[in-house]
Length: 426
Image 1 (tube, one colour):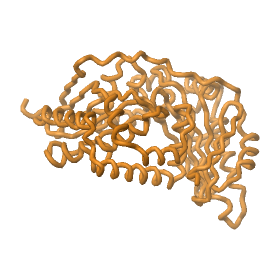
Image 2 (cartoon, rainbow, N blue to C red; image 1 turned 90 degrees about the horizontal axis):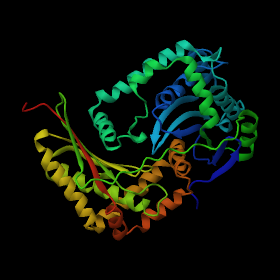
Image 3 (tube, helix red, strand yellow; image 1 turned 45 degrees about the horizontal axis):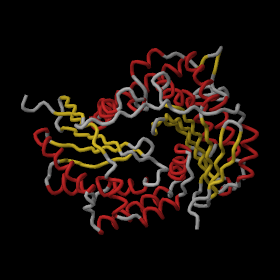
Image 4 (tube, rainbow, N blue to C red; image 1 turned 30 degrees about the vertical axis):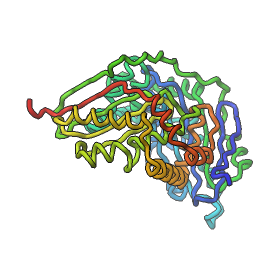
């Protein structure tokens, strides 16, 4: 049994992905655009989707636009920007009732795709510029989103770790861009960038629901016209060989709880043969509540308010995050190092292996419970130019051995320790 049936149809300028399933009462439409992360464009890309979602040529105000969504039986529409590996992704998502469940028999899917076309290809433009008031409003909101990272010390510590670890590499950039660049942007520049993005980006349209691929393709062919393109690849930054000693950065702020975040290079990314072994490694090391970090740093030693590890699949970057009292800094680093060493020595019990397999299986199945989750999983293949099915994920997790996990663990290298300390004892 195939868990997800994805039909990929190549179109001029974009790829159409249709996932037919009767699991949901709604149809989910997601338009994704990816381009390399670059400091010249990162802030424009962080702003653009929010300007486009506010209004369009046909719906010139937010009120117009929102009231039309209400007419579509309360369709929900939102945008997002994210960083995945060395790419910056803009997403436009629309969820609409499936017309099969409505008595009126309205062509809702067609109306929804028509709406998406309006937003993407017919923005609210005057004299070669996007609407000035909208741009000003959204610039204010963007500044708040960037500022919110500084106010949330956990996110701030993660951002600082990346800045230190990936100096000179676009991966150090934040998905929301740079606050200094926000004021410099105007509605004319942003419209020029809009035209550039739609002529250069790699673009994918996902439709998940109880739909027929043939019908979807017909509607899409009528609505979406783009030039063909060869999407750009990121300028690869030469990975510096880690020095014998990891870099250590300690900064102080008026905070109650210190934030200890450690960055590792795994040298494994999505699509590599040992990627699933790395996933299992992360689960046992710090990804789940039965992990070594959780049990030893938090539970046994009571050193941390939280202790966990996270994996970035497309950069091969692993981060350990923990909240500690500043006086426990050295002890916490030591115990975290010991857990990694235990993984490298193959000190993994059958129980840890089985628990992790079970959690990964449940996570995958839970992700498939929502159409957005399905798209998220499938999009990994676009990112990595691979063809890994959901069934492959589950099969790989199931057959994983302690030896394979240990081999993945031995590729993991500590690179940078970042500690945001409180002022106590000053």
